[in-house]
Amino acid sequence: MEDRIQKLLDLYWEGETGLEEEKELQSYFQSKDVKEEHIAFTPLFLHTARQKEIVSPVFDTEEIIRKAGQSSEPKVRTLSTGWIYSVAAIFVVCLTAIYFFQNKTQNTGAPASYVQEIEDPEEAYRITMQALALISGELSKGTEGIQHGLENVHKANIIK
Image 1: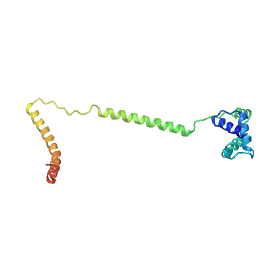
Image 2: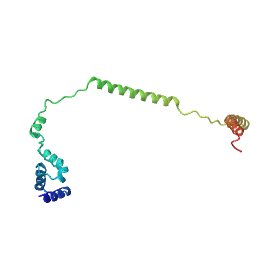
Image 3: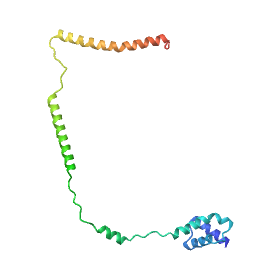
Image 4: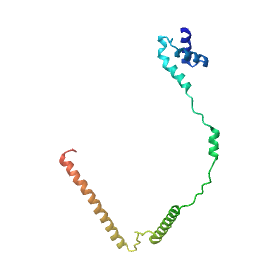
């Protein structure tokens, strides 16, 4: 008998037992004659036997279908005033935005032009010199900070 139980357990762990063999294993582990080397497996087989005894509730599908089919009066949905006010507000905001964007583009027209055509060469020379002086002044402001920083580096003797 012990040899038979060991073979059934080996087949069970391999997943090759049938229903009758599993029932035989369950009855063995439910009995009081469990061998010492098989006691560790007892809770597993007792749990399996207890799980088979649990009965799940069966739902009456006919009743569920019947209750689902019983519909009361169809619900009529009406637009509430809140929805109407919301739609009207969105419409007004859109119209206002369109009005302001159209006015803005009509008022600005073409962008201002900074290009001037000068016929007199002396006037062109004078305007060019003013522009170059302005650019030179701005560049000298930027280089003053760099020169000050370089003086500090030379004082620290970091670069030799």
